[in-house]
Length: 162
Image 1 (cartoon, helix red, strand yellow):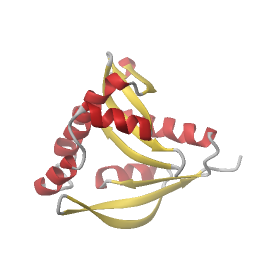
Image 2: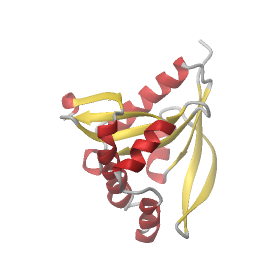
Image 3: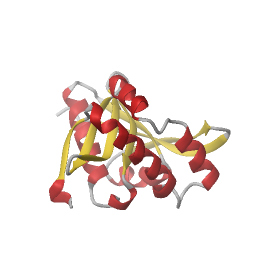
């Protein structure tokens, strides 16, 4: 599978796939760490419509993992703020390095744009993996979505001045 994954900038045609990747990553992929009510509120926070994700592509620099012409994972970057806004991978493709590669590309792109420190508010599924890759935990927080409180971890990664 990994040989067929290509990484590239998002296109408007990826938006419908992004909506599905987000929905399934939250509803299935987060099942071990969040309750059904939390996941339903989280998934409901963003529309499951391509038009909403096309609009997000205009707001955030978006990179996708493409498999046979379909978006199977993506990362959204807020370049001005130096932060990863979202990172999602199709649940059945988890643990194959797709998220790791998307984060590496995000780090590289932001570093090239002069960002000295990268931030993310990570889900409970993602935080441990990022910490193993050199990210520093700077705090825990709760975010409200649809009347449900969801825990997440604030992390940062400073780029060396080399």
